[in-house]
Image 1 (spheres, rainbow, N blue to C red):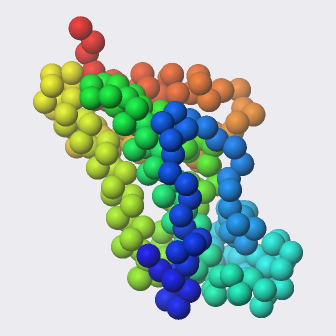
Image 2 (image 1 turned 30 degrees about the vertical axis):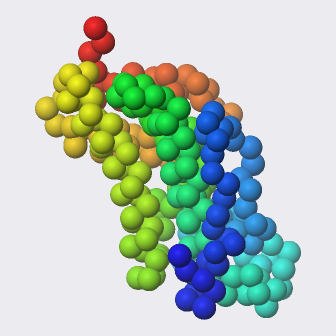
Length: 219
């Protein structure tokens, strides 16, 4: 974790509530502090390097010194935002897998659905997280990459378990797991909640594609 002295988010800024069973499907408006919500909107529209601290402060209805009182730098805003994003994503994925029970196919469907829902309902956060890794400083980048690796390991472990149990027939479980995760993450670049394809229909289609990637063959 990073505190204000290191230029990163303070502890109080990066601890969203864990997800209860079933709650991983529930999405309302993102519960972000006003400065982070302003930074998210600006970064999503203009990119990290195209956004000034002054603009974020104006979006948050704060003075620049007022913004610095909460977040000491633009980098700390990006880190605080991405830490909340990944903490929320990981909590939802873990809750989905736990709720699914021990069968690999049920865990697989659950984690895929969780990833899809997150990248539909938290599009801007996911998009900024994917595109601004290059903008993170060296003190936080390994932490963020560690969060992403942890999410990928969840998918990897389920796919390998499915292969071992004889439920998945892919000869390339590692590659298949990465392809599944990449497909889910990509939703954030094109999906629109008011588009022709609704969330449940998208999930049904992509679950079919994801099962095909791992070679699921029901009895």
